[in-house]
Image (tube, rainbow, N blue to C red; front, side, top):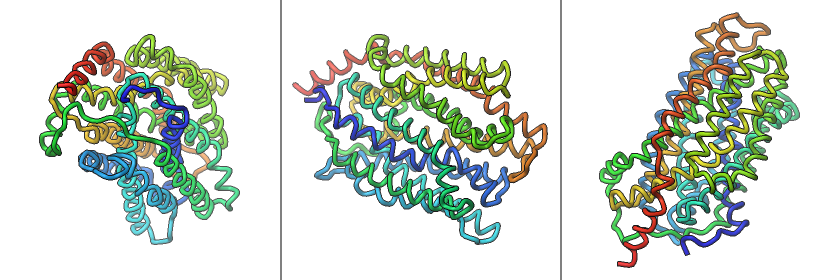
Length: 445
């Protein structure tokens, strides 16, 4: 039963959960720095600090959420009920995030902290169990990869929709603060419905190899650090999200001040995502043949070549398009593999320590997304401030221009090298079949 083929409807139903997340999460990553600086009027330095403090603080909440998910018992399972409970609160929190009541400079900043923390906390409470659900649907490594591909496809569709629709929607709702509020009423409503679809269309099947009592948090947390592959993938997800967050947050500034056309942010989104979407349709056989780790390493090398291409002339739109397509192709196996690799570390941890704790293991994914996106967004805010950037100006200083170019062109190369070093020692693809066999034998004893 644990290795049965998962039907298309369940794979798609699982995937649209990440589409739901990205209507709020990706929008925050792409536009929140711009919203806070150019619409609300906060300083870039204050925004950078806000994004770092809120996300890194909240990233630790993910670990607590993971522990709670491990102890969850309901007629719907341990992961699925969280999607039901938090679908509506998640949608509402996104609307509040892009609301900007007139509270004065201090009050506005306090409101930003409060709503941003709220979004992050609710995102943790829905996204950690959503990630856990992958490992609960099936124990088959390849089926998990397919589920992750559906998840990533839907996430990329969400990113594409958000990057191309947001500014036109804001304008259609009248622009300014009211335009952003109206746009996120739409996004929040869609996210709510999609999470409910995921809840209805999925099923939890996988059970521990041996019947176990609730694992005390302290024991479970210590066990994580005996799981070397979990440490590798947690670090990989963290650095990946730093890179993605920097690219998302700086994109609108790159379009406005380097390419001198803010509306090109939609084009940047399309050329970054469409090749990735197409690639995800064909990547499964590659992962099956070469393994998740080898496929991801190949993708990192291709992505680095894309960034090097952009170095030749960062202001040339044609070169930017070519470089973005190359980087997007490189991102295909990385996006398809990362959370599937994280799921495989659950079995390794169970085999290594005798304890199975899906929630704690998967909290690494959400922790990496939170802390990574917080660090990435903070880097953008701080480097903009270091360059003397002031929101709402027609022209900016040479130092601010250089900061934007560094973040968009050169920093991704540095982070890609870090990811390569992190992934090279990962050998679980080869060890996994024997580990699952050992666990299944333990069930029969």
